[in-house]
Length: 99
Image: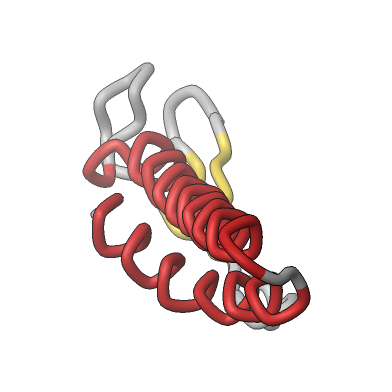
């Protein structure tokens, strides 16, 4: 999962790397362009991977980590910045999660 996100980040980061390359002449421009591309790829890939891992850890295959019973859905929000949030709770210990 991380590698897919990293490669997408590299593709998107290459735009910023190209801008840096065009604005700085010579070998220094090439180095700055590569560094910008790699940094963007790492930041984007790492961010998307950490968000997905955090959601998977919260979800815990659909079971409450405290009681080991299935999560019960109780609501969903409208789309906020392009993502829809779903809310679940445990009927035994009343722990809530938002995914």
